[in-house]
Length: 231
Image (cartoon, rainbow, N blue to C red; front, side):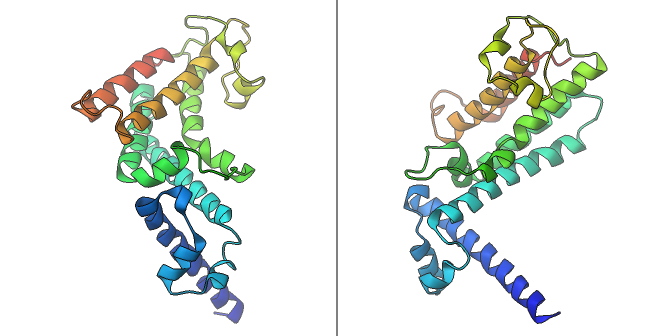
């Protein structure tokens, strides 16, 4: 391996190690208290050395956020790929189940992306694509149903698509020729509801209310499948 290749490999390994240490700090101290100096101290590095990999705390946070979104998205994508292609409801449940399972297994990383905003941090454009991976899977699945003729693009039309950001229906692939269609709005509602269910569980809001979270979640996401008209 060339000297340049060796340097690149060492840099990639150190970048990964810094991120791993930072994730441990998320678990112990929370995102708002994340400190490059503290990470450097644990690694036995000078803080100036860590700044060569992450120029600021916000750069480190952005990396952790993008990696968390990508990990959730990858888990959901692998799950839906393994589900029966012709069974839209099974694919829907595979996406929902994998998303919840990842969140339960990684609560602190989930809290970073779906919990309280970090004071002083503004998420850059680079986080938008990764953040939408699960939502895109859901809307693509609905669109597949429309294309196959098994999902009615009108359903119970309410015209609620008009409440969405202009052109969002086109961007998620759920545009309709009817001004009365509510398919895109129902898709957005299902996406928001999915993460609402997960967040209430992860953050303890359903303690002493829900005894069997997995069973409750499966039933609730099945109702969301009804909402978007999956057969």
